[in-house]
Amino acid sequence: MAFTSKVLIYLLCAVFTFAASGAEGKVYLDVFGKSFKRITIAAPPFKSEKLSNIPSSMGELLAKDLDLSGFFIVTPPSLMDRELTEEGIEKQEIKFSNWRSLGIEILCKGRVIEGNGDVTLEAYLYDTIDGSLILAKRYKTRREEWRRLIHRLSDDIMLAITGEKGIMSSRILFVSGATNRKDIYMVDIDGFNQRKLTDFRSITLSPSVSPNNKYLAYTSYREGKPNLYIVDMERGKEVYVDREEGMKTGTSWYGGNLFAYSHTSGKSSTIYSYDVEKKTKSVIHRSDGIATSPSFSPDGTKMVFVSDMHGSPQIFLKDLPSGTIKRLTFSGTYNTSPAFSPKGDLIAFVSKFEGALEICIMNSDGSNQRVLTNGGINDSPQFSPCGRYILYSSNRGGNRYNIHLMLFNGENRKMLKYTDADETQPKFVQ
Amino acid sequence: MGYITICFVMLAFMIFGCSPKEVRLTPTEQQQLKEIQKDESLLLGKETEKRGREGIIIEEELVRDSGKDREGRDLTKDRLFEVLPEGELKALFQDIRFEFDSYSIKEEYFKRLDEIGAWLDRNRGVHIVIEGHCDERGTVEYNLVLGQKRADSVKNYLSKVGVEQGRIRTISYGKEMPLDPGHNEEAWAKNRRASFKIEKKG
Image (cartoon, rainbow over all chains, first blue to last red; front, side):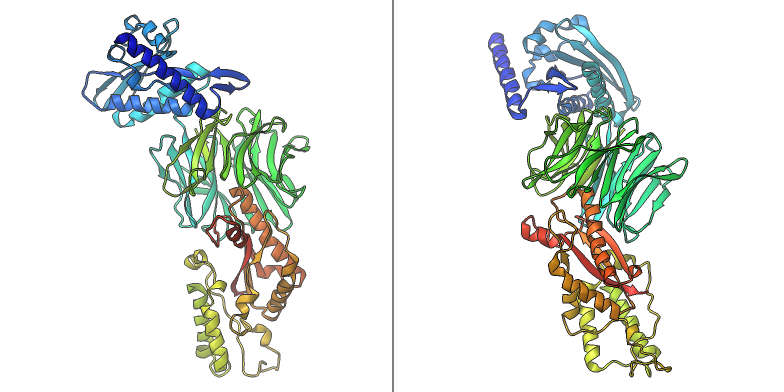
């Protein structure tokens, strides 16, 4: 019986891996030039002495986080028999060969202790090949904050396994609302703790948050025309407003306190840089026609932007110290919405194809352009702070726009639906 | 509706209330004035209506019997509106449509824009807002800017035919305020537009 069930599990594992590869196109994940296989991880139910639903909810959330990360194949609970789930969490109690025989490479075990309104999780991460302990951590927080605790654990698992922290503790800034009632929202990536940051009964869009999380910038029609605002989030005070006639949009931060946006009015467009601490404003680019959507390399020396100087919207790279401008996109007649990766090696953008707007990626010199999405209207790509994920909005799978997340190679595309209205212009907030 | 209605109520108040002996509309003109009031296409959008923060600034004297003031100067140029036959004003201020991703004005609109310019020249108290809009098949941010260029193209044309730039405001709504919510070429063509709103007397 045990033998047959194991064979069955083997088969299921094989089918599982195969199904996953079929759905995503590739199993191997290209991470910064290296190829990684998706790692099979198992997280049996956390031990707990108290009768509470928190430990099992924690297990479910961890599985969800690991799956969303795109780096793991999470072993479903149904594949773990009683012997495996009831096994202890200490190294000497674990029969690694049993886990290995299921094809499981990484094992996450944990114990939950509840008391005094607090919840503590002791988590251990083992490599089943040699039984080595990869991670051993104790997390403690208030009982109602248990979700954050799991997000922290999954980010640490990502760090231990892939060398870079995960994104599950991040928050997402986005725009949502009906046609002429759009506001800015902030939400935990898992959909909890949603907050409405603006409430103007108007159109408010193109948000961005400063790297120190102190300032929120956006374009809003709340005074009857599109003006640009920077607000101190703690004090709720406007620290900068541009009320000039014309369109002011394309908000982006770089080099700590520097904020950039474009202003289009009359014949020309100007991209301004505003130092929010020194309160000084300077021109970093001015040209006829359209120039907008600035995004900066991490060292702040290069700016990628959209211009129609050659007729159709294309993406250009400006070296700020020298002022040299290089055109990066040549294929197609519509390339917009560029976003620098936080490492400065890649640029995500939107390109128009027959009836669709697709998220694409290229090296920061314009080489190696690749299409990541597959149909629909996809817009506003933004990298995660670690550079491995791209957030974007998409109407794929319906008429509504929702926030989507994918790996920067286009794999593991997931819809993150937070509201019942159109959701656009998502950005990661640390 | 409210904003312009208030304008017209004010107008009527000034006509019939303030200086009843000096200003008089013929019954036909009154009828036409009512028609314009009904013409919602020329009213400011609801957004503006609700805000209403700019207030109503209608101060100049209006049409008089003779069309001349006491010193004999021609006052017809100071009328708030030149009253046109039913539907004509609406037709004159119809949307200007654009090709995909374009902000150049198509030749077919030159004649009408010339007429709008001439009308604005005859109605010097009128200020207008030109709104630029786009269809859904573009990125949010680029469309916000493209809509501005569309509105500015129309403004540029009108200023070339002699309309003072200070009488024209431009606002882009990108693809945020589609006229037709459909997802087909017919809807997109309607949505790629510059539309006019008659704003106020300066």
